[in-house]
Length: 195
Image: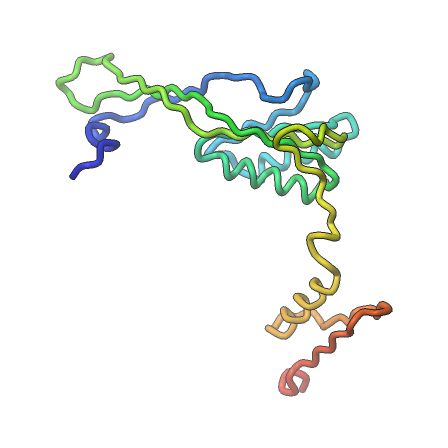
């Protein structure tokens, strides 16, 4: 049985796509807020280079990342990178649908030129506000800044570094600084690696 989604579409090729503009879902944003519109073909390196340069300045207090359709995961990735690099950022996430208008042109010669098919679609969209300043914690979608101590501990870093050194990395093993009440990990390489 032929899929209804593909039946007939092979006779057309997409010649255009436009997103209907809609206001950001965050009330009381300053007019000069930085908005990063993430697209499916956007390069994360380029997006983050611009966003980081703006957020490192004192004058920029908030930034909004938005993306729809296949760009949603890339949008979330950019936000997570920003939160790790800048730190202490408050976050509000809003989900919604974005309206798209696609124009398809017939591939068959018997159709008169200029006869196009217009399709209106609603695709998932995400808007994420990051702020250096506190936001209302009662707002739906609010996430407080992450504490770095909750993500990993120095002991975990040492254990990972030690295991990498045993696998042939060229860096020597570091001995951890003993802390009261902490267990000391001692790792010795196999004898054939020492000789």
